[in-house]
Length: 304
Image 1: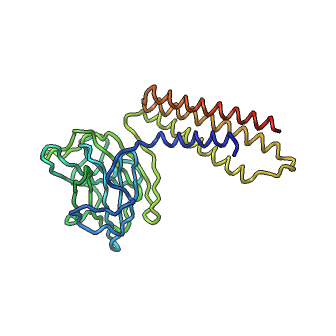
Image 2: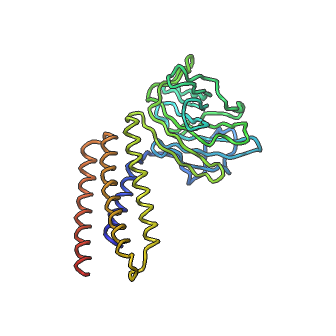
Image 3: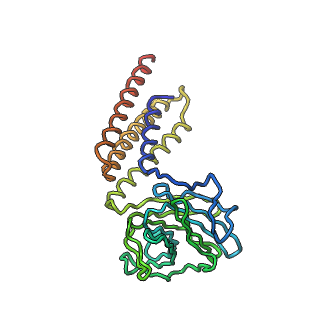
């Protein structure tokens, strides 16, 4: 394997690692859900970790021709957790199921909401387009996790799913169930047949235009990586007259990919305000790999 390939692989792996915030959890898709009090059986449910940064896990199944069952599992951080169903992936106009556990008396509550607008007073409780079966819905609290269990009367739920977590310590009261502004959210697309999930995280702590730039660079880097793989598969024979042009193209795109990937990682660290420790750590690792890559490249060319 060429040194440049090793360098590119490290850059891409580190770039992906930046978006993952590990969080301890007692629930996972590798084991069966064992929670007392669930209103329906979940043994045949499809399980997906839908939001790794917040530890959200979704289990679902079509249990009847027009009946879909869901269990959303999330860590209890003294904040509400929410799952929304949207026609276009936006929060405004979507209908959501929101649940929370009181930190004072341990009481749990789950309600439907309609997101009419962006301000808290436009998030209307007991409204929305979700036809929830009330006698089979419950919110459970076990092992520091919240479980929202509910069933929807629909032939096929909306595939654009939203997840949100509220601000720590700002729970709706029993008398006033208005929601405070969420602290973080994500918009995803779920294929109910294959279970494939894709989505972009939108963190309210960051500036949206900056996120767009960072995300755009990431997509550009991914496209260059795909071009490199395609070019490798279409590599002409060494005796071919166009081989030298292929080499120029392959080396140029590879180095452009490395440059933009490295820049985007530093940019991501800056946006996340991760601090000088991340910059120093990544810069040191990058410098070591750069030196090793240069040494190996020189040795390879000297052998030729």
